[in-house]
Every structure is written in structure tokens, then in C-alpha cells.
Length: 442
Image (cartoon, rainbow, N blue to C red; front, top):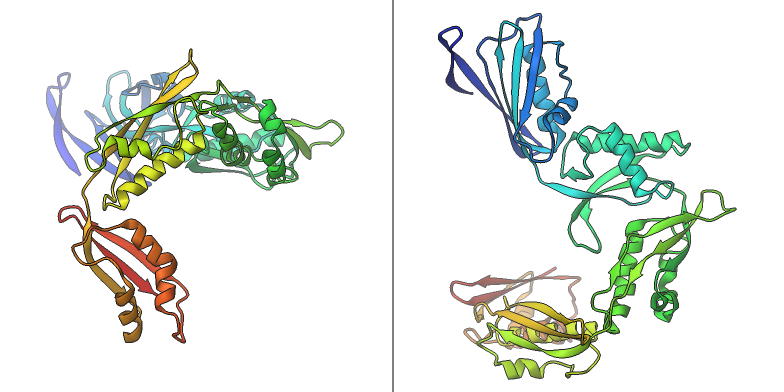
């Protein structure tokens, strides 16, 4: 508890103020109350309540999310409860307040700061469009603005509103929410799901002829067709099964629209056809790569790892394989922390693409210690005899991987025992540029 002073010119005297700190869901939230004269035990009229500090919400919007009402009688506990509820709601990282008792009643001022917000997604609500869901949430959940915080009671309010929406149309289903990663954008989202939905996928209509007719894609469709409808499952299918087909054909800027579900006529509400929009964009030819930041490996050698030549179809899968080949070349030389940042440069007029590739090499590691556990004396002797990287030698990651894949098995050949699993860890020390190999036989 912290104490300070506040001077009331009307009364000509100083009064103490109190700061109260709250901890909600492991987030540091604080509420403080600064008072001149506390409302009477029976309450006093609330003449004003102002909310400042938010760049997302107006004062009247925040007021509507509390139990406070202008003109109603409030007590000091009421003001505190309003601060507590805002702190627990989720959209605000901090909530501070103070109040003053005037002749006309109580004036309250709340200061807030906005918490980080993430997009919301609705996984399996084929009965409604996203616009209909958003409109329902905005009408029933104060402070819902199309996004959601990572935590807070507003998430339960949103789930309750969606359950009410389902009940109104005769589909009483429990709704859950989860902070997860979006399949296509790789960013965090709040995902809402209708649990135990019986709606299944009858078919998928892709919005481009390549996906619609590609044999590999069509053969993989049983991963979706006949299964419960899930927009997330469709997006994962696009990411894992459809996108590689487009990249391999040089459609490097292919974009996938939001999948929608249409109920099949005559099938009641149990089967839907998924419509998956695809904009393939143009197909590009390869126009080379320019390297920067590389010191250990010269640019001509890196370019020699490219499987594409100028004018070739810019096969996106081969491009990704090239970057991996470059990483492997560095890790074979002991540069275990190497990072590549490959930025495409599209020439839309000529339908060509080139890449600027920045290399961050990091330290060159040398072999430190081989640390073994869980072995018999004979087992340890064999493993140390089979290990090929001497102390102080440049650490070749490919030798390490080969040892894990085949060397250990060969070392144990002829012994009457085996190990179900082997824990492995590379303990790097960037300051000494050494790496210890830790193997735990279980």
C-alpha cells in the first residue's frame, strides 16, 4: 500500500490517497484511488465518470462496460468494483482511478492503457457469415471491436454471446475459445469453436482450376471430405497440400481467401460444400540471387548451390531447398547459428524474381566435450570409439547427424542390449565458440 497527498482547495486541507495493486492472470495490472472525501456509506450521486488513456475506446464505451450509471448513487466499493471489473476484462493492461466528493455528488476519473489485441477467428459456424457473427458480438458484448485480448473475462462474454446466437436459431452448442496460431499468417489469434458440431464436409470447391484438377490435391481430399467441418482444417490443408503445388509451378504470390461453407440443399444442416477462393497470381521465372554478409563461404560457392539458372521456372520448392542447402553448407563448417534472410524482388512486368539474401553467420563452433549418461562401461567405450569429431576440431553438424542415424547402431552391434530412446542435446557456448554433445541413453 502506497500513500501520498492530494490538496482540496475547496476545503483547504490535504487528504491521503491509496494505491491498490492487483494481479490478474499473471499480468501486472494496477488500480489506484485518490480521494478528497469518500462517498457516504449509503452512497452519493455519481455526477460524472471519465475514462481516458485508451486509443481504441471512447469514454462512453468504457463506461457502458462497467456497472456505473451517471445519476445513480455509488459507494466507494462501487468505484473499486468498476476498476476491478475493467482490470479483469482483458482489453486494458492497467486501470487506475480516483474520485472526488463535491457538493453535487461524486466525480470519478479512470485512467487506462490498452492491452495487446489479436484477431478473432470463428472455426466452424457454417450457419452464419462472419459479418453476422461480428454484428451479434458488437451488439451484445461491450468493448468488442473485432479483435480480442489474449486473456480476460471478455472472452467468456464472447463465447456466451455466440452460444446465445446458436440457441436462437435452434442449434444449442457449447462454444470454446483458445489462443492459437493462424495456419496461414503464423500470427496469434483467438479462435472460437462450436464444440461437438455434427456438420460434415460433403465436398470442396477450389476457386482456381489448378487446385480443382490437380491429381495430388484431389487424392488428398479425404483428409477433409466426410470429416467435421472446420475452417482451420481447410486452411491447414491449403498450407500443407495446396500451396506446395502452386509454389512448384512458380506461383510465388499465391493467396488463399477465407474458406466459406454452403449447406447442401436436401441435406438438412448436416453437410456443407466448402468454397476455397484462390488467387494464384502470375508465374515467375528465376533471375538469380545476390548475397551479403557471407564471409566464410564466397558468393560464387553459394550461387553454385542453386539448382536454378536464370530463365528457369522459379520453382518455389527448389528455392526453399536451396536455402536449406546453404544452411547445411554452413553447419558442416561449424556455423550452427547461421541465419538467412531471403527477400524476393518481383519484376511484375517481366514476370521474373530475384532474391537478396542476407547471411548472418554467427560463431564457428569447435568440438567441446562428449557427455554420455545411462551407458554401461562397455557401451560408453564403444560410443567414444565410434565418435568421429576430436576435441577442438571444427564441429561438423552432418557428422553429428550421421552418428545419430547410423553410428550409434553400428557401435552397439553385437551387444545383447538396446536402448529404447536417446535424449540428445547440443550445448552451445557462443563466448568460447565450443559445443558439447550430450547423449542420454534410456
